[in-house]
Length: 116
Image (tube, rainbow, N blue to C red; front, top):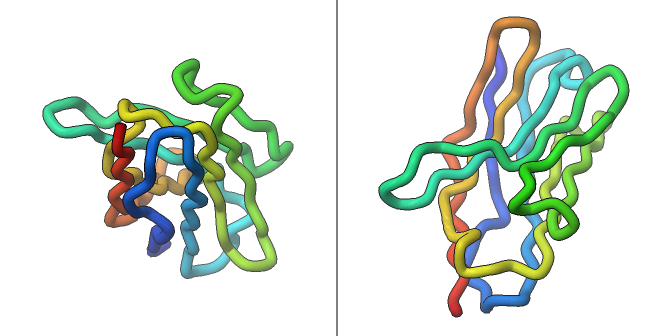
């Protein structure tokens, strides 16, 4: 069982930056593929970024490529999402996801609001 807790959300002006953190409880954090998803009002949850456990390879949604960076610190059981050049359309609740094999876990989400 893994519990995830996100932090770092808030209100920021367009063009600004935020860094989200997601800290996991439990063992074997380094073996989990970690990801960030987001859900805007009235829309479905969508993929933002992921970092693989075995290679640390990263993948991004086209909408955030070049602006967002996902990273992890296995010693701290934490994954980060650095968000730069934020746009109004980045406004959403951001969720952390941990996946190992066929099992996935979600955090409770953190609100990011970008004012135009």
